[in-house]
Length: 204
Image (cartoon, rainbow, N blue to C red; front, side, top):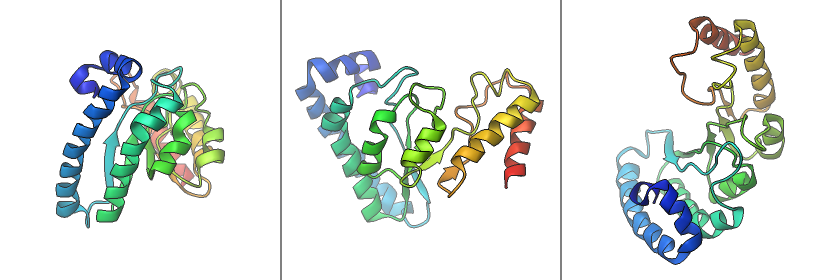
């Protein structure tokens, strides 16, 4: 919807015109399910993970209320996950940046197996809380190192220490795939990147 309507328009539509939002998403779902049918038939027995992308959060909160997510989008997410799980061996991976703590339980209920990038600097995304409350029910793929202010601006030792701390929080009991929180940008010093890799290697 955000690609067709632009994000600003679509987010306003959610509140101003929810009936037409539902009609639009119904139409999109027909196309998504047709694509999923082809994907599951072609590679569903050999590919491990299928990635969905639906950014739902900002630094300071969600793009919409929990109630709007539950009524307008959760049923479709559930349908997509159910289709993948019933018609393939793949796990489902949701990429969503930002503060999405209020709906992580809903995402689990909708059937997602993996959450990425786990933006721990966003509001209510405390890593220890996430691990304690949801670590038994979903895999965290990310959260291993903050790319906004640590990986690019700290000393190598600070990067190492921060990365080890995140691994110590997310790692116990499994359900953690190490990855930094977002893309590694050109301002990251090579020695900081090596320090992050060393922290991962030392934690194995």
